[in-house]
Length: 243
Image 1: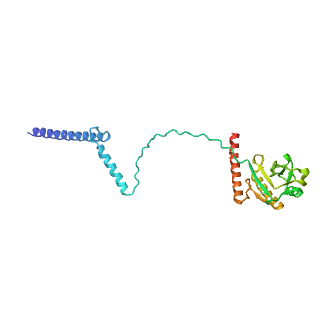
Image 2: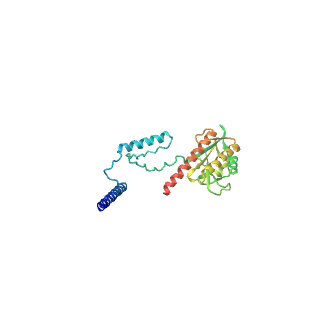
């Protein structure tokens, strides 16, 4: 009887131990399975819908805007068709029209400039008798240096009869400056203008413009403007020639 009871007890203990081991193994397998699923999620696992993700992003952007945060949106560049541009060739400037600057010193109506009084006034203002039988003003009053301007009689052909100056007379004098032959046109114009005024004082006369009208300050300013334009166009033309 005792042996039977002892056998039953041993069998009962074995059954309990087997059950405990089986349960432990099952739990271990389940744990390992869950670990593998975390590391390598299955494609069968439910994924968030695309529409739901967009809704979340939109809601997040709206929240940022409401809070005054900067919301950056990607702007795709727009490619537009542009016509082919044609570059117009640079045209060479037209040559300046101004070639001479002319002033006149005119005697009062009915009177003449004559004789040695006229010759003395011309020489005193630095004019020298020379080519074409007219007077010329050079850089220096002794007749040296580059030519600045020339002086002729208003009578045709404009020449002076120097050997017979005592019997020579004319109603006026013409001062003219050839711009092409002048190295410093601005300074030359100033000298010619001052000389014309001085001759008018010395010989008792008036200074007139190229149209034989009394010279005004506005006319002088206009002549200076034309002279500046001439110099500018000439400078640009020279650049084209050199190129």
